[in-house]
Amino acid sequence: MTYVIAEPCVDLKDKACIEECPVDCIYEGERMLYIHPDECVDCGACEPVCPVEAIFYEDDTPEEWKDYYKANVEFFDELGSPGGASKLGLIERDHAVVAALPPQQHDE
Image (cartoon, rainbow, N blue to C red; front, side):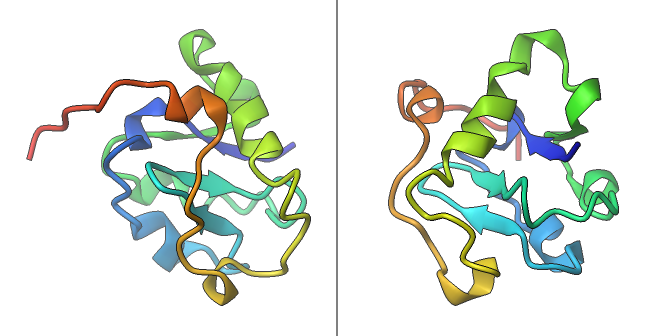
């Protein structure tokens, strides 16, 4: 089991979760952040700090965003397990589910 970042993060990328993550497993794509399923230690530190409630425990992801589990896993197919997001910085791509979305509006 792991945590999943879902649609509320798209085009927002607040990054408070990155600051809280003790194992540096939250990676930055073009339009959203992704949690590496093999590097996440399931501590849950990221979930309460997300200002738009985009982070869910895998089994608790709302039905409308269930595809984001797959998006978080498949985002790392080409990367493998780099062993820490801070080494990579911005990864200039997104999963197809995210890339296909129209621009998202967020209240400031």
